[in-house]
Each structure stands twice: as C-alpha cells, then as structure tokens.
Length: 534
Image (cartoon, rainbow, N blue to C red; front, side, top):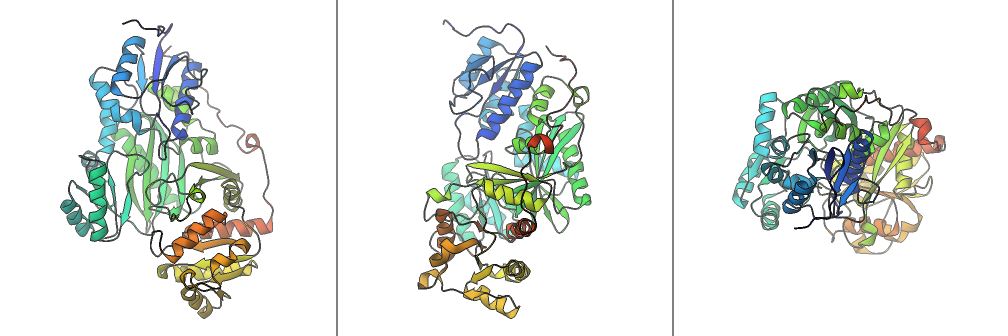
C-alpha cells in the first residue's frame, strides 16, 4: 500500500506517548515525552512522536519532527516502525499505555531502548520482584497474591487486617482499596475480578501511621543519580498523585534517607535500569519498607525537576540512546535551598454528596507547587495555589476519630493560641475540655439545629479525620459541604500539623513572591558533551 510518511533524513528515535488523558495518566507523562523530544533534537536526533490525544503538547506540530496521530496499539506501532525504521523506540515516558504493549513490540523486533520490557515487567510482577528483593535482602510489607475470593480472604487473615488490595498492572492506583474486614474484602475482590479478569489481586499489609516517601532517580545501568526525595505530608495509604509532598524532606532523619539511597542504588543495578526510576517507601518506627519500584517515568518527575532544577526526563532520554551520566556531566546534587510543596487539585466541588476522603486510588485532576525558604511558607503558598484561601482569624471546626483525639490536643491548643475560636462535636469537645482547650460544642448534623453546616461561611478551615468512609455519615456530609462551599478541610493529623506550621509562619511574616530564576539560578544547567549517537 502507498504510504504518505516521509523517510527520516537522519537517525531518528520514536517516542510513544500516553494516549487519552484520564485520572492516573495525565499530562505529567506528556511532560516527559516533550522534554525527551526536545533533548533528543538538541543532541542531533530526529524525533518521531506517536500519540492520539489532541489535548497534549506532545501532539503540537513543532514538538517533534514527525507526528503520528494514531492509537497506541501493537498493530499501529508496528506499522509506524516498519515505515519509519527508527534507531530506537522509547516506551518508558508515556505511562502504563505504552508499557502494556512493550513486550509484544519487543517480540516483533521493535528496537526498544532504555530499560528492557523484561526488566520493567520484573519490577511490576509481584512474584518476580519478590525474588529480587529476597536476593537483595530488602524489607517489604508482608504481602500475598490471590486469584480468587477465597485465596484473598486466606491471605488477608494470614497478614492481618487492615490490608491494601489492588489488581496488578494498573496505573493511578485504579481500583485500589484499604480493606478492614473479610466482608468488605469479598465484595472488593469480586468487583476487581469482574473489572480485570485474569489479573492477579495483590494484597499487602497496611502499615498504619507510616510516612510514605517517593524517590525519583535516573540511571545508566552503572551509575545512579537521585533527583529528589519527596516526603508525603499525608500518612501512607494516600496515593502519591493525591498526597501533598515536600522536597527536601522536612522530618526524615539522615539515617533513613541514607538507607533509601542505598536501596535505590541497589535496585537500579539489579534491574539494569537505563533511564528513569521511581521507588516508593513507607517509614514506620524508623524502619524502611519498600512498597514498589517503577523503572519508568513517574508522575512526580515534573515536580522534582521544577523543584530541583535538574531536568530528569531530558537526561533520561539521552541515556536511553547510549550516553552515560558521567559523559553528560550529571552529578547528584544536595538538597535544594528552598522547600517546594506539591498540593493536589481535587474535583469534589463538582460532585455534591461524594465523600472527599483520599485513599490509595488516585482522584486528583491537577497539582500546584509552592516554593519558599521555609516549609511553612511553602505549604501556605501551595494551599493558595490549590484554591484553599486560608483565613488568619475566625472559627475553626475540629472533629476527629477516637484514635486521634489525644494527639489532636496540642494541635488544638496551638490553634486556640493563634486566636481562632474552636467549634467541635461532643466527643472531641469532652476531650478538649478535660485538657484545658476552649471549644464550643455543636450539634451533630443529623440532629439539626446549631451544626457546623450553619457556620460554614464564617469557618476558616475544618479538621476532620474519618471514623468511616461513605456518603451517608455525618462526617462525610460535613466534608462534602466543605468541598462544595470551598471551605478548606484537612483529613489527617499530619496535614493539620503542616497547616499549623504554615499559619504560625504567616502570622509572623507575610509570604514573599520571588522569581524562580532567583530561587534556582542553576535550574536546567548540565553540561552534555558532543552527542555520540548522531
């Protein structure tokens, strides 16, 4: 058949994009694809972009030399490869969509460069990855794999509730859930089996009150440079795409950070990573647990690159063409001088009645960044960027679950000391009264009368940690009303503590606006030698 596609005039690299945007697979991956195209062009390559989404920068006419606006299927990519005959094909920047077809492409002789699909699959396959960790002697939360409801129940009882369950080989934490009992587990597993037939169900012991950490790195199969260590502000169990994160870490010890670096370097060598790698950890009682490894671009790469000034996607693209970190002049940097806080933008104000509690399944539709010399100021800026206009005076509503009441006492006292009037429910109010924290007790929403809903317009923010999830309870109605009325709300004690730090900073000194060029004068600076490939 006749082909209208031109033949590249010099060596070309093909980049597979992310396809349609959706929660869990969005513009973060498109950012990586675009930066790869820019870096490869500067290095003397021609670039071929394959993507089917007109709402992306990667499909702009001037992003690459050749654009194929085609579905990301095995058949279509094979046809494009046969016509264009690229020297290499990059699959690790487009999220799960190109990864799902990478094994088939490799089987048919497509010249995939970077981390091999076999090693990517080794990290994603629970049984293969467990063997890698045993060889390296790295600690993981107790876990199991189930292919039926009965197997799942057996594994959960062996591990002990609560557990995190999810189908394998999905992105964005899709269909992932924290399960508290056998009844809920049976219901969830049956739904997961129906939604993802043939996909094993992964079951992990849920580490309560743990701190989650993301590490993004770039590797060349020999050396590894860690781009950034992102500490989650919410407790472990909230998806990294939804959790507020900060770089550099604001509470982790040097010993913990050193251990995470050692594990990251070890995994990069074991998996022969050539390009980007994301490692997720949970820290509990000063112990480091490895949650998962993704030898591909992660959704945190744009944030890390912006916060540190190190263009990870550009560097990774050149490494996949055969360059090394050493000859590119890329070295590991120390912690940035300024704190950068990532905050998620959530769509709950469009869905009245939906419970806004975050969990392991991603729900955010965007993110913002606040950057400042102190953590408190950076967190305050991030809240403003996300649409949470924090008032420095007024009323504050606090209602927390029983397990959090004792820890909430000193936080509530700090809020009171800053001049806020505290409103609360009866159970939390009794604990506050016994400990000398002034608070006004309101009725429950279901009882009517003087409830928090009648005060929402005058409330500066709400702190409400969930007793249970779902759309019918008093607390879920409060949280949903906050989202619809744009009243800032915080659902974990860790985010409440960060908020108090931000408010104390703001009451002391107003936040400053400075150009990014001043904060990161050497952003994007690295000294690649003359391209060896083109």
